[in-house]
Length: 148
Image 1: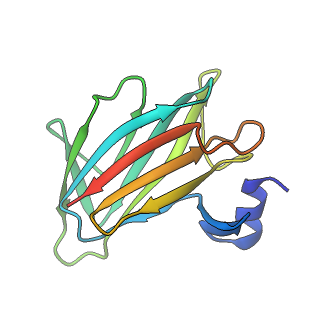
Image 2: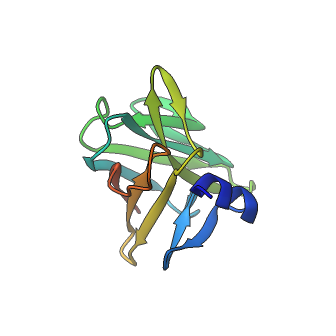
């Protein structure tokens, strides 16, 4: 079975695979007021990106107020700073997942897509992403997220 089939079978965004947790979607701290995103490296022939979605609030990015943003490694600034604008009484969540573009089509959560996550106590999270193409390769995209 490939990773997307394992996620579907488990009916969750997190599975245990070959000795570590893998994520299809990763939830960032709900008390974050600032999120900084930078792309460390790519090892895929396909264009790689991160999709970030907020529930219970909006993200202020480059003068725009958004609920969801898609950042591409080849066009995003070296560091993207996102200010969170949470609604006071709403239930909050901030989620991120890897996507990639192949032949003009944006893909996510198919084939061998998944993320290894290294979350540190200092608000720094490293995402090691495998796009869904071929065998799992957690060097397809490496991104650094900092929450404050």
